[in-house]
Length: 423
Image (tube, rainbow, N blue to C red; front, side):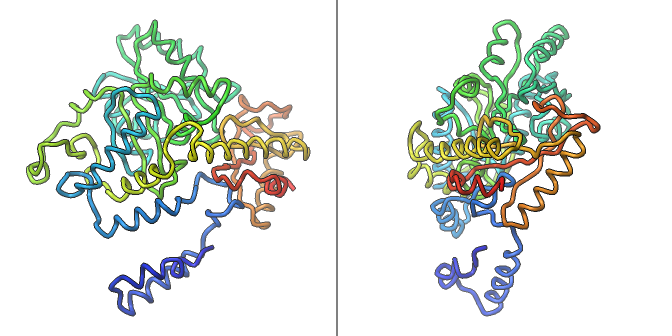
């Protein structure tokens, strides 16, 4: 791990810190050593990608001002930056008109999207892939909206036949459902077939929310097949969530929510007698559920967009391509070394030690996971359901534990690393 005190010595020397302050920071630096090596390629476990140094510097610099993007008098410059950032994200997904803002993360962004869905259609019900992020069932409960998980098919994508049946069922009840399409499940990296979901709207009236918190930036990538068709349909979603603190090179926490109809701003309308009086221009707090929001986050995203514009084939897209290639490379290497492996759709690779029974395989994969951690290679585990398992397994348990690797860093595109993982 890095010695964080040494890393920021120059900045610390410019601050008005007394000896006690420095002793506290030194103690903090020591405590921060008790971490996994998130910044190194040997870490391919959870969805933690080091922020780009430019983003870190921009956030650090702006934090000295400590702006609040709730109202223009609290974050004048950074509110303008946030609007630029949202415009860039909207152009990337293909929105011709939009309303949106940054949030503290994907959970709040999804909460706002579901809240707008409820405000638009008070009797709505939320439908989602059973493998969608648990935030949707949790936030539906918070909002008092009925939630119904729908089965995933053998590829881990929402089952379209069941979806159509449930949509017709709710239409017959006079209810306009809200369908969550997951653009990159956090377990397997699967992309729900948004293009085919959109096609259902020719006969059934329902709202579409695209949870692209993890996979949204792959809209810029040279994907093919079903994933390409799904991402090409992003502009048809009523709302979209993207997390800049995942593939967007930002520090935690920074999410974003976008709506394709600016008119939904009416649902946010409220008054604040001590924050909205300084300008007749839009205050971001007038279109957010969160009140105080860090202006420094907007500065971080804006700065990286100057260096890495959101254009197909650009430097940013090339970094994403490295992650996609890495997942394919690890997948092929695992197969060559005698493991089972599921072909990745994005940059998450699922593989397994071979065996007979589900319990035996699970135990072997847990042992493999522990062995690699001792070797300094940090992966993750995933509970693979019977319906998504393509291998010949004797099912003495309802699921099987497999090895999951999240290859978010360009440095993961390394043949030596792939071989080290499965050695």
